[in-house]
Amino acid sequence: MNHVLNVTSEIGKLRTVLLHRPGQEVENLTPEYLQKLLFDDIPYLPIVQKEHDYFAQTLRDNGIEVLYLSTLLSEALHTEEIKKQFVYDILTESKISVDDSFYVIADYLLSFDTSKMVEKIMAGVRKDEIEHMKKKHLYEILTSHYPFYLDPMPNLYFTRDPSAVVGNGLTINKMREPARQRESLFMQYIVKYHPRFANKDIPIWFNRDFEYPMEGGDELVLSKDTIAIGISARTAAKSIERFTLNLFHSQSDIKRVLAVEIPKSRAFMHLDTVFTMIDYDKFTIHSAIQDADGKMDIYVLEKGPDNETLNITHKTNLLETLKEVLGLKEILLIPCGGGDMIAGPREQWNDGSNTLAIAPGKVVTYDRNYVTNELLRTNGVEVIEVLSSELSRGRGGPRCMSMPLVREALD
Ligand SMILES: NC(=[NH2+])NCCC[C@H](N)C(=O)O
Image (cartoon, rainbow, N blue to C red; front, side):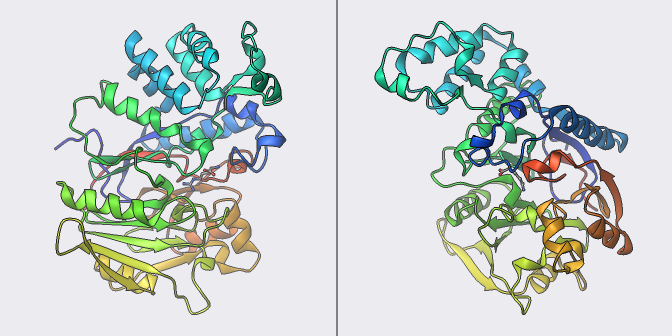
C-alpha cells in the first residue's frame, strides 16, 4: 500500500525528504541572543544557503524527492480563514502579550501574500518594522530594548526535530526549548490542511500539547518493529512512556522501544548526535556515551500486563542489546573520530556521528569530519560528503537537517 508517510527503518532507500533552506531568520541572529536561540556562532547567509543547496542537490542527484517546509506550509494555508487562524496561533504561542499589538502584528503579517508571510514569520518581526505601533504602557517602554515582537526561528533548517515519521504515522513534537516551541505548529497545519496529507488518516503517535518534551533527533527507527529513543536533554522519560503506550494502543507495528540514556549536555543534545544507524549491521557511535567498561543505561519497553503499564527491562550493553532486538550475530559500532581523544570530541562537536543514511550502507556526511569519514569508508560504507563550514554552526548535521517522509521498506 502506498502511504504518504512511511518510514520503517533508518536506512531504507530514502524516497522523500523534508528540508528547510535557511533564510532571513539567520540574519536576525545577534551575539546577545545566540545562546537563547541555540546557536554557537552566526552563519554567513549566502554561504549557508549555498551549502544547503548543495546538500539538497546531492539528495536529488540520488533520486530523492526534496520538499521544502516553507512551500508546504504556504500551500497548506490555502484559504483566508486557515491563514488567519495560523497567524493567531503563532502570535498566541509567541506570547505577544501587549494587548493592542496582537492585532497590529496580525494585520501586518496578513498584509503579505502567503509565501512572503510565511518567510516573515520564520525570519521574525523586528520592533522597528511596525512604526505605527504606539507605546502606551510603561512596561512597553521599559522592555523596548528587546529588538523583536516575533523572535526569529533560525533552527528551522533542522527539520528532523519538530516532527518525525514512525511507520505511517507522525510525532508532532513538544519542543523542549522556548526558541523552538513554535516550530512544530507548522507540521500540525501541514498534515491538517495540505492536500498531499489532509484526510489521509495519518496517525499522530505523539502530540505537541503533551506536558513533557520529545524531539525528533531522539527518535530512531531501528526496524519495522523496534525504535530507539534518547532519554536526553530534550526528551523526557514521561514523553517516551506516553509515546510508547500510544504506539502499543494503536495499529502500529512497533513491538518494542529502546530508551537509551545519554548525558544531558549541549554537545550531546539528541541521541542522533552520538548514535546513528548506517547499515543493516553498522552504527556510528560517540564513545563518550559509554563508561570505561563500555556500559550505559538502556531500557527495553514492551507491552505490559495492562493498557497503562509497560514491561521495562534494564540493559547495560548497547552492542548486545542491538544484536538481540535486531536478530543479528554481529554488529559493528564505528566510533566518531576513531575514538581518538582529540579527533573524537572535535568531530562529534561538528556532527561527525550525525549521519544520514540514504540507503543501506550509503550515507551523507559533513566533509569536515575527515577522520570519521575515512573510517566509515574503511568499513565498507559509501560516504557522500557535503559542504559544512557554515551549516555546522547551528550544531546539527545531515541527519538533523532532514526529515524523511518516505523510505523504501527493507526486504
Ligand atoms: N537532531 C539534532 N541533533 N538536531 C540538532 C539541532 C540543533 C539546534 N541548534 C538545537 O539546539 O536545537
